[in-house]
Amino acid sequence: MDFRFSEEQELLRKTARQFTDDEIMPHIAKWDAEGGFDPKLWKRLAEMGFMGVCIPEKYGGSGMDYNSLAILCEELERGDTAFRTAVSVHIGLNSMSLLQWGNEEQKQKYLVPQAKGEKIGAFGLTEPGAGSDVAAMSTTAVRDGDDYVLNGQKTWISLCDVADHFLVFAYTDKAKKHHGISAFIVERTMPGFSSKAIKGKYGIRAGNTGELFFEDMRVPAANRLGEEGEGFKIAMASLDNGRFTVAAGAVGLIQACLEASVKYCHERETFGKPIGKHQLVGQMIANMEAGYQMSRLLVYRAGELKNRGVRNTRETSLAKWQACDFANKAADDAVQIHGAYGYSDDYPVARYLRNSKAPVIYEGTREIHTIMQAEYVLGYREDKTLNKMLPAWEPEA
Image (cartoon, rainbow, N blue to C red; front, side, top):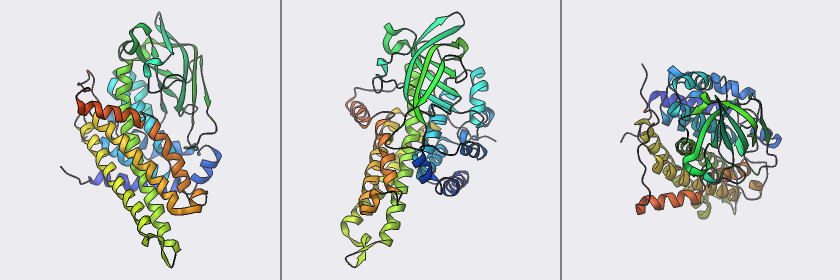
């Protein structure tokens, strides 16, 4: 085991942290209140090479390893969850899925411009009646000559109004249940497509989230990702990548809670001494630190398995479950440490608490991951090698 970061990874962390400090932190309170961030940030993310950080250079990316993606997600969520979410969806759920499952023509047409940041990718799986129970989806794709005709609706889709490309899942044969789901690359400009933002979210207010609608939308058969009936398998593999980025982001949120709480502990005095000197406040700080260190190790273990091209569903599930729970608790404690001020917008910790709840729910609720981990231990669940694995990371010359 080698816990050292490479010079390239250290530089990435420094660059991403500076980007967060300079271009997110000064504006995020305003963006959170207004319900959206400056679209110029997309261009800046692309200029920094962040939009394809772990995508090979031959497909327009930066060619870094998968733990570099984790580092980027940590630092962005330290600024705000909305920015980590954008990278999670664009890279983790969409671009990495194209890298794993796409044919060469699809990679050149869709992955390359996404990795360069010229186009934005998103992911459409959840429906009003189908969240954890994926097989309950109702969206259909009926083959008609060289096209598929899509009809249906997706909801809670991040980047719904800003993405150019969507990875959408639909039934091509509902009688086959899980084995009748297929995946499609959908373009916003295809006739029959529309989207609508969801307003009044509890958290991640600076991020765009909403619904997608498909009304007799014709999608070329060439845009099917993988074979007919492989959609569920593709979706689960995509979620492995998405959960990895969510877990990494949770590490960054814990760090943000720690930084804010330590700063406040040194500023605030009660009963004649800094509040950090009170044992129960110190206990909350210690728990944040423990959660931070444990979560980080779980995330980087999963990332190293990805680097080696080894399936990591079990390890990523554990990292996502634990890191998100630790982040939610850290944010709750950060508000408590700040007292009444923590319940206001005078300090960032109220936003941290609001933002921390969604990751406990999406990409597998804590209950789903609890069941998964129990099934692994009891021997009821076993992951097999997929017919198309996420490519192992290979340093490029």
